[in-house]
Length: 327
Image (cartoon, rainbow, N blue to C red; front, side):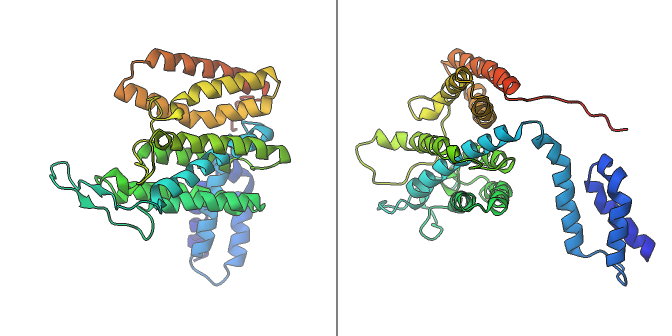
């Protein structure tokens, strides 16, 4: 039985990198066997613990590519941007206590009559859970509960996948758009690689980025005379059409900010802006080439400017690429 138990432990340890196993596997297996005396199978908690820590050990080297100061600054900016989006979306789209009518949607493309949307309590959909998680994570980080806040945001990624699967083929009113889910999921991962608010000076850029994110969502509403209904979730995630959202100018604003940070020799914040901009640029380009846009040349010029700034910022912020060969 001991041989079978040892084999189970060694299979679970395959989640760890080969270099780690070569140095630690025998010691860990011996410790696990000593604690498993009298049992014929590993505990579920032991296996789960090995899987989680093995995955962390595999991705940990990625976090060391960037200096800690850049990771923490990027984490702060990502938390601010995600928090600003979450608060405005929660209030303006999911809750909207001033709305007098329940939104309607067409259940199928061939439907001729719309039907009333089924509410999730006071909210218009389960996307509210995603936004509430972001708000709760911000509170946890502000209180210094970094580990709990980090895992809460990481958990929003699989929850976003569940939202898409649960509402596949149903009108987008039931959930945030795929663009929104990609942006928030990417921001959550950026937050997780660092420690937000590692310094007191982090609060100012956090507030600025959160305000910018909120204005990006509110712009379509601010163009109307009055607000009487919920914010349509299909309008505020438009990263290309400048008539719909200031997010269309995100690339240029980020590029300009990076250049200003470089001129001021603020390598940390320049590198952080590069990291946070990656999911925004990716979504913008995806929309650009998928839907077409007359100003594509201008957008590409902005991307090139951002790329140049990214290379300089990454180099000056201490980024080093080191190839490590396992024996």
